[in-house]
Image (cartoon, rainbow, N blue to C red; front, side, top):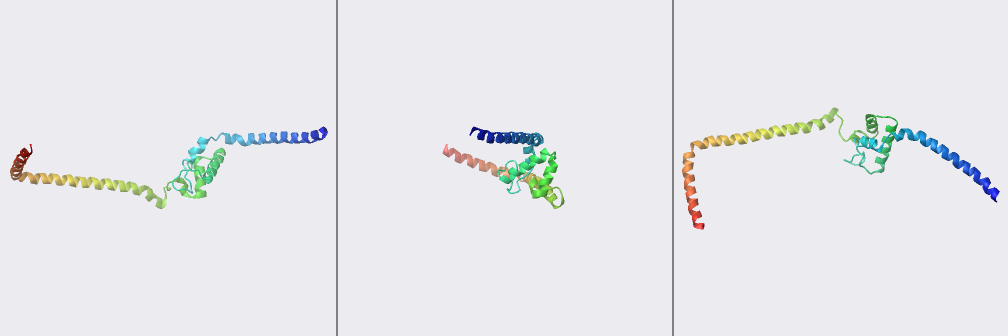
Length: 171
């Protein structure tokens, strides 16, 4: 029985040894480019992309399985030596411009960039003119009121005197 165990044990041991040697050789060949890519490198690229399935969620914060696979693709592409822009171009080709999170600066999309600035400037100009007209109206009232100030001061004196008399009753 011991001869039979040795007969089966030696080939199995030899296969395990060969398999271990082959696996370590493959791991060394395959791990050298991937080992240069850190999780921070992948995170920096994934911060620039948005999840195509969720609205308003960056790729680095999304927990969907699809986003994990996208981050794996980023790691592979970085290990192959692709630049950030090449990776973004790849994902735009796959999912469309919505993965960039902002409209590209071309065609009709210029409105999305220009319109908010135009509205802010227009609103500021409107408020400035409105404030000037309100301040200007007060200065005109003040000059018109100077002519009638003598009549107004007499009525104000009489009012003040009556107010003082009534307040004395409450003291």
